[in-house]
Image (cartoon, rainbow, N blue to C red; front, side):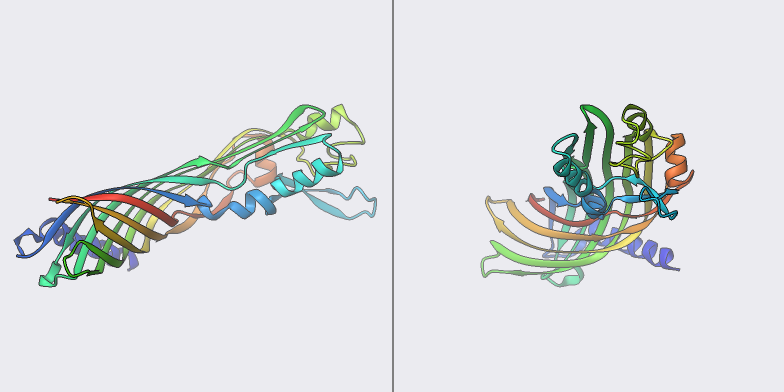
Length: 299
């Protein structure tokens, strides 16, 4: 039922945005924008502080007879703590959460339904990771861990909104609400070689050792799990625009895309299969808050 309502929404939005030229007093704009989005996929806490436990349990190193899970994904905080306590014997290179660049193309009509203050807009947004999302660690110089995250998403939001102009219509405030189609997600790739450090430093590092005794065994080697989703969601934006030429406007806006679904991947390494499962599932957020600057030209 929800998908039918969304489809009806886009069917109605298309004629409004693309064929409203028959209405007198309407204005039409082609727009381009570039924006910044932080914490792509909403997995910043997973990368930096949380990590992820493995599905494999091993005896507790304290000899109490209890079991504890190995670690499937190491948080940067835990590795940094080990770096500090071992005086660099366990090294770490931490780059934090993923942050992305957002490219925007859109078409906008002002004065819909014969009301000058109302506007309709259709956009297409492309978001790609440009920083963060990479963690590595060494033991006595050997790179035993490399975790890399990537993110790509395309969203197509439609808007109905309201604008308030100054007296000569050179500057204005606006806000809009609508629905979107989304497609994208994030990938996790890399290596966590618990077996090699255990063999190199028996009883000291790796499974059964004093440090990193929760490292996965069998090792996770060249894993590449892709969690991709698609569907429909909601969105809204607020912004300001000001005229800088006879036909051109500079605009600043904040756009929020609410779009999420359950992503399903399949693991490619033996260690990944044991640690995560052959077909792991994870909630995937596509969207978030984008802060954008752009240019729109009157047609």
